[in-house]
Length: 204
Image (cartoon, rainbow, N blue to C red; front, side):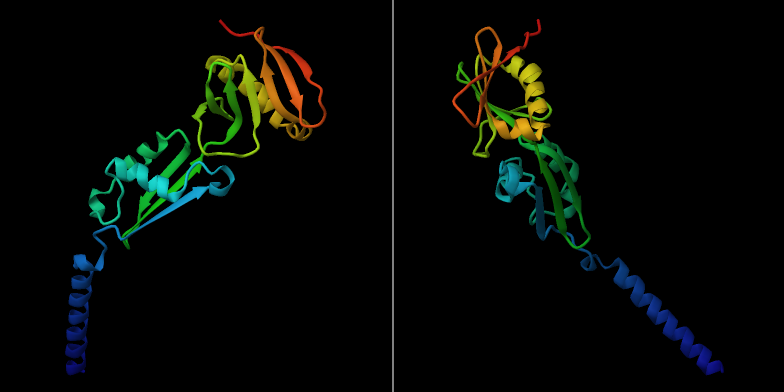
């Protein structure tokens, strides 16, 4: 029994030594970023951003993590830079113990396209925010005429949201035109007629 106890003690000691050594061995944990996973929600629906463009944004700021020491990769800085993009709604970033950096992005949702008589060409999102003209080519309602940016944000966005909430109007309206007196005209998808909707007073 004495020899058995000694043998067990030695075995346990060797096991604990190996376990502690392996746990503290820095080579067992990844120290550099070996892979970047970029996930973009609604990438095929809105088409404003893709993985290459996210990489380009981060590379320009010196934040693309691939090949960098993980302790020098800041998820908070990556999130902050991406959220400043005019097409990004939300951005989340995290690191894993196996050396991967995960980036999750959602895009802003365009509501209508503004093509004003003053030459402005941009999008209004569902929250009334302005998005710059891009490669996006989806079948959006076009708003034309006397449309200033304040008017678009305060009034056109409200009207467009109301239209988009109705299946009937969303499928019927092709164009909204704002007259010089701020009268609103609706151009339907079917027929050659124009519907005069009324006036939207501009705020002081």
